[in-house]
Image (tube, rainbow, N blue to C red; front, side):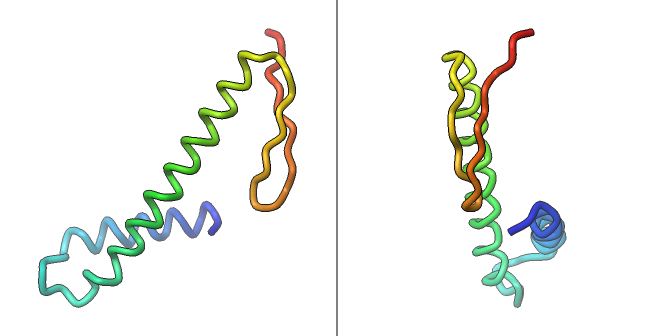
Length: 77
């Protein structure tokens, strides 16, 4: 899922939650979307934390994101 798709999903969830009651026809469709959004946010925060933790080592670390390999190292300031 791309960032643009995640933003559209978030907007749809916000709009749907304002109207969603127990009997709302889209309620069951929104629950998986909310779970996927939360999972994406958690993965992003975990990756950010790994990057920040690696910054204290002074070494380059390899990260795979979407099948692509990235090398990340903190630069001296």
